[in-house]
Length: 88
Image 1 (cartoon, rainbow, N blue to C red):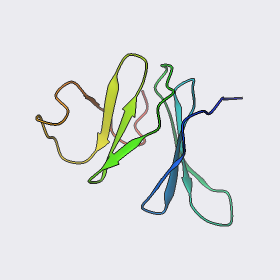
Image 2: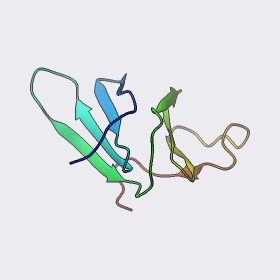
Image 3: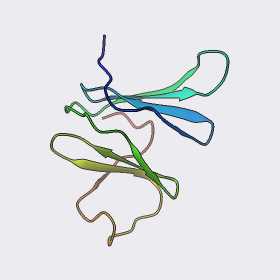
Image 4: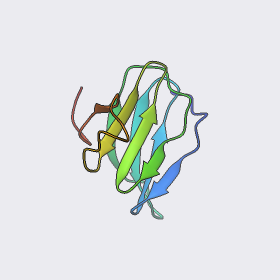
C-alpha cells in the first residue's frame, strides 16, 4: 500500500501519480484500468508533478528530477535526468 497526497496530473492521454514513498505510476486515461509504467525513486515525495514542454519535473525530499524533454541547462542545471520507464 502506498499513500498519495500529491495531485494526479493528466497529460497526453496519461495520468501521472507520485506516492509519498517515491513510487511513480503512469495510467492510461480511459474507462478501463491500464497501468503503463511504474518507477521507484526511493525518496519521500509530497509534491505534485510539474509539466512543461513534454518534460515532467518531480521534486523529492532530496532531489529535483527531470524526465523527458530537451536538455536545457538554464532551466534545470541541478536536475537529475531519468528516462521514462528506465529501471533504477
